[in-house]
Length: 145
Ligand code: DQA
Image 1 (cartoon, helix red, strand yellow):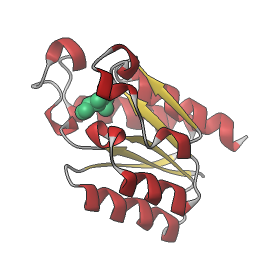
Image 2 (image 1 turned 180 degrees about the horizontal axis):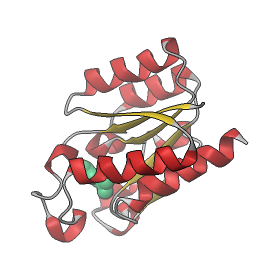
Image 3 (image 1 turned 180 degrees about the vertical axis):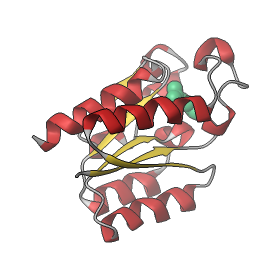
């Protein structure tokens, strides 16, 4: 059974409260329920993790290396656009990582169009709300085949 981790970055614990027109009305708990059901369907052993702290996300990524996690779906939130430290952590662990975003980051503010993390991921999916995570999990499944 493949082990996967789903990481939600900063402010994603505020979905359902923040900018509903952009991120929708579902809470992070609602998202995790949908995500874990999909993991079950795909036959993944899964864990979800959320943090507002860059270092905590880096520690979690490094933990994946030691704990034999097979793949990761990550929404790095705003860290996407400037965290070289998270980029280095993704690159260091050498695991397949899919970057996902609820919104279409290419259709928003100029600063959101840059992802410093996507180049070290196997791919990026954005703009489909919670389905970005679902597609990210499907992408991991295909990557494992
Ligand atoms: C986001 C997009 C980021 O630009 C933003 O900072 C977020 C959420 C998304 O899921 O659409 O916090 O990652």
